[in-house]
Length: 226
Image (cartoon, rainbow, N blue to C red; front, side, top):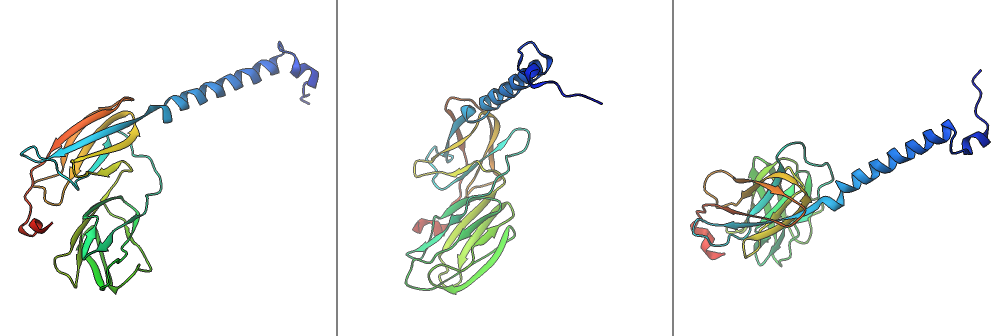
């Protein structure tokens, strides 16, 4: 029958059990240090600017980042909100992660009827005021065009992406995204964009990384009122 060592033997630094425990502790400590080196310490900032063909800033463009290899990290998507204010959708363009729930509160004194026939998400919120009882879950990637069945000029967009790293450009055409250092592909989408999604490969390091993408726009005539 196997006999356990006497406790006094375990306490001796030169004993075999003590050496094994010490080696296991050192391996555990090394693993923790390696994980820390590739964790928060390796986080970086990617600053992206989007311009049109003439070099002017493009606001309300969706910028999202995909890893050059491997999978994106799993995690719950953040909920989001599209308001109706002064008979307009606010924001005009909303990027969300696939699986995110979006609420459509009506801040106006008149009723709205929000809907979409887009393949990525078909839904219909009939005439209402205030906040609808149930949010809309965007469970497929791609663009979703929003409309109001009462006010024909109301148009907005939700764009669902398959990554947690995304943003929307401000009036100066810029946005910043926090993500781990590594190799990525930056992609840009805008509702008035000609052609396919703009793409550019970038290497993000611990220092701030900048990228500028140019897209060709063709605004519809109705966009002049914005």
